Image 1 (cartoon, rainbow, N blue to C red):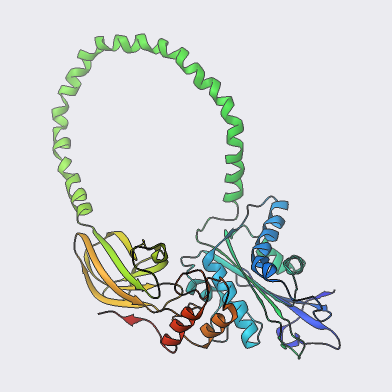
Image 2: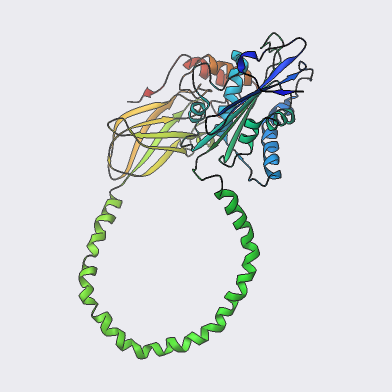
Amino acid sequence: MVLLSLSFSVWASAEGELSLPLSSYDENGVQTESWIVAAPDSASQPSTAELSSFESDVIALVNQERALRGLYPLVANASLTLAARGHSQAMSTYNFFNHVSLDGSTFVQRIELAGYTGLCSAGENIAAGQTSPADVVRAWMSSTGHRANILSTSFRDIGVGYVYEPNDTYPGGIGYKHYWTQDFGSRDCWGPTPTPQSTATRTNTPVNTPTWTPSRTNTPVNTPTWTPTRTNTPVNTPTWTPTRTSTPASAPARTSTPTWTPTQTTALLSATLVGAVDLQGRPPKPHICWCVPLSVTLLREDGSAYRTVDLSTNPYGEFTLSGIAPGTYGIRVKHRLTLANYKSEITLLPNANRVELGTLLAGDSSNDNMVDVVDFSLLRANFGSASNLADYNGDGAVDVIDFSLLRTHFGLVGDIPVE
């Protein structure tokens, strides 16, 4: 197969061949596009076991490439995986190949909507037509821009999304059938250098530890040497006693200790918020199914964000936020598979406050705060599986209960006010 650099407009089928596209966006916003001329897909349909492992296999192969170059492994992230799967599914369903979704959202916006907030750097690789993890990683590693994303030291996390569409006819009636997305991200702003250096230093520390142990072992030998000196110190004690007695001159400093009292008082004046949400289709509380990830945002009265936190609820559907300045806020709560709820003008007093935040309506598989045909397509594609992409009630299966929840809320848009 020949790797060529070409624009999106000419990614079309040729006589008896298909152009398999690759495209990447790196952390600096530089886009790389290329394609591979290949015969139409003659591989047999992947088995269920293969389909379920393809995404993790890609991550393993990426980390293998990184290990060969002495780089730390990337960590699989659920939010990045959600964003990547959603984009692969959208490209497969709506017959397009691009980093920009049909609604105009960029890959960065998709990553953030999936719950990967506070990011410092991000990148994306996409591909279509490659029939296995080995094929797609080999193709990406053969292209400069894609390889740079895979080997970047700016990223810490990775998510992979793979979709297989056996009846695909896009483009040109032949069909890519296999759609791949890699999303990369980092929530910290370390530079490319510190992590590898600190890793090496920490690795070497155990080697150096024995070297220092003898020195510390020798310290007891010196201890007796210092003991007489300390024993003699009582002779000097009277000399120092006046100094300490004269500390009353410093008494004002101690008297000024009340300077610390206001600080302690303000600490006592912080507010704690205990929020409670209701989730649909779940067994009675308490239950492990009520432990879900949420994105919670507190808004000031002028509408600006005071604090955004990703957290998890307990088996009662409750979460706790501490260290909040008392005052009046709005609060927005969203689970990645539900519409967002918004409650305005909650007044938080010092110490504990409990706020009921209503029922989060399920059905938002694409995490875009609306329940529409995209969510229906994702549910249909995962129906009968254990995928968490459309398992709205958290029972480990995408089934008729999840379909019923989506159908009930079809056409709704968040944020839904809570009285």
